[in-house]
Length: 323
Image 1 (tube, rainbow, N blue to C red):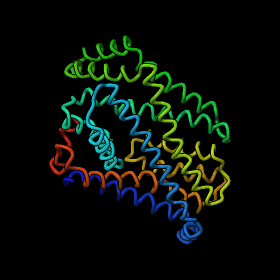
Image 2 (cartoon, rainbow, N blue to C red):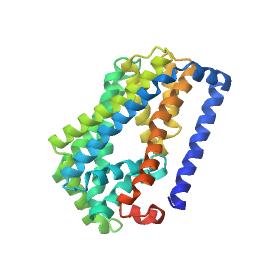
Image 3 (spheres, one colour):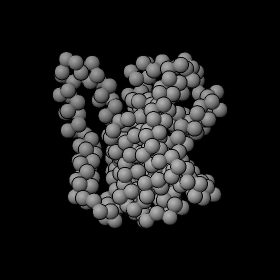
């Protein structure tokens, strides 16, 4: 990786370390060490397997979307592109997502304005899937169910608006008349046409189903962690805690949701009956098995299979990627 790539990763690693130090102080180091000692680490492969199932279904969605838009790189190249983006999971600005469009352009010449909407559709359907899991879990948790349902309705309305072709094109046309945005009008229309294809009922339903299954397995992995610690949360409560914390981390726009996701996981686990040290220990374990496991996979794939892609990662210009 080039210097700018490494700098972004290292800054996020440093921020992540600060978050973990803060939680360690909160839980008390001795109590935290004791909690880790009590954890049955034979369950670690099962937890990681849940994460891998999540990645498998999310890759299936990525493959489905590229096929839907008739972007058909070789299957192995598409796998490398998908997992290489994990390297940037903890960088500001979601560079990993931009990287997928950049690599598709280098592999088969697909314009970024055509492939970039896939990233938006991925995140939108991830949100819908997580919100559906939230709704189910909310009925087992002592929280405002109305707030969760209102959140779900909001995302349903956003999805409906994006799927309304005439209305969306009218908005793009209106914004295109503004002096500062006029030069983006053509690209915006092209990008929306790709988005509209993916938001038709059948593609949308398939993507949402894949998202629900994918994220449920990470929620289930979190429940396994809590279960091994012999803490009270049921599967549905653990699903709510993990889904809610993931959404909060995404909305925060912080790299990898660092800080906000960990804080939500810890706080809600305690609210559900976990002790302070177990809540923090379970947060460390599940974040290592999901976020940091993803970064590790991304790094391994990048350096092992870089030769499959017509790009030298040391030479990538981040500014050109964003344009």
